[in-house]
Image (cartoon, rainbow, N blue to C red; front, top):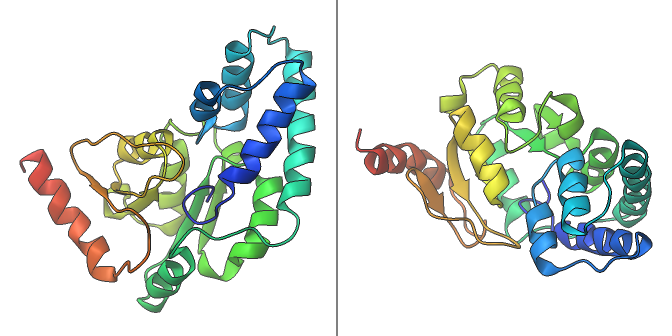
Length: 217
């Protein structure tokens, strides 16, 4: 969702940098990049460690509440789409291919984003607070495949961050990488596009062929 379909990472950037200021620290680009794609608890842990703050349960909880309230404010109203994302959703839906929204963002915030995206596109939505472990663990993609009633190796995952790509790969999905805020390293079976502009169903079908060739099967 964030950085793949919606250009919402820029809104998260505002919130986490303001949170760092509230905590008496200055957010560096290195720490900010480490947060991209991380689940809420992992992101706060990374942030506290990077800012040399004591990650007590009370401090983490307070920071989490502050961050959720600020992101909620920023998510009110339309959120900008990533280039080509809405057309890509239309194309896949027209082809009769079921889609699941998979995001490390918690459900309460995802519901605001769905006001922009439209719930009608998705047969299922899975959020970071609805699985035991968020990305980069595979749980969230395994749950999405279960809800779609298909094997993960029959799923194409579209991801923008290294964290998300690792989660999809570990789950066994084919992966289309469309980097947004930070680069995604090349790897066996990874297919890259600069954006979702001009995406066609044939591009998704090619993922399986590309993955097989890269893995030597």
